[in-house]
Image 1 (cartoon, rainbow, N blue to C red):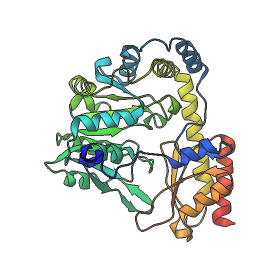
Image 2: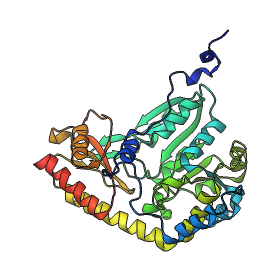
Image 3: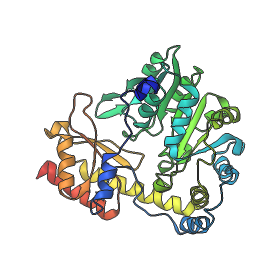
Image 4: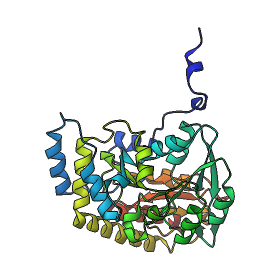
Length: 366
């Protein structure tokens, strides 16, 4: 009799379930301040809570295919209609579905690093080969390198994925560079999880009308503040959406999440206020910490800020440990560009942000 291990697809060998240790820590120790997972510190709006209450009472019914909320998304983004939109259980499921639709074992996925870890995780799940193209670090800036991405494309390339703005660096790639990559014909996935913080005028969604190979992904976990409800979507050419949608598990997005998302999308005032708060707090934190000698602060268009403290002579992981000892969870960032000084924080409440500024100053100046 064969051992059970012999029946699994070979590319799953050695793979493990993803566990976010910092989120597990936050739930185990709720007294700690959560400044590590790019969550929105503001609870859902009254309109969203009303929708949750209403549709929780209908949880005995299967959801529909989400034509209403897909239509809202299409209207907000200036695309033809719901046939250009597919819904997912967070953008994480969206990536899983895109990769399953495009990538076979041995095919290549190009990512621009540092970046969101889900690209790597879902590539491994389908047996793809990950090709990481590093950003350029110079003059205290992390810059996109479109030329290197173009040079990395081979006949085996099935996906190029770039975040707009990037996580964790918080910056945008120039719009003409997206066009150059799209013109290769290789599927180009543009992750716009945080684009609402800078405004939809920074979105590349218009490219979906010109290029069938461009796919935009979004989530309501960030600016809309619905991380726990798991609602994401993609926007693309209708034929592309139809093909990827054939991979969907029926009823992958529940009734409560779908109608809560619809209420959030309708609540333009609520979104505006969240964006205003986030951007004001981001600037306050950046300005408060920019004077620390040797600490590089990367300007962010998201709800997180990346730091490199190499020139201070102190390690990023020690900063994270110090923060936890003071009751705050920061996000570690692996060594890169010959530096061990990296760490990241998420924008929290006004009180939490001041606490973070104080303890970062204490760590480097105390």
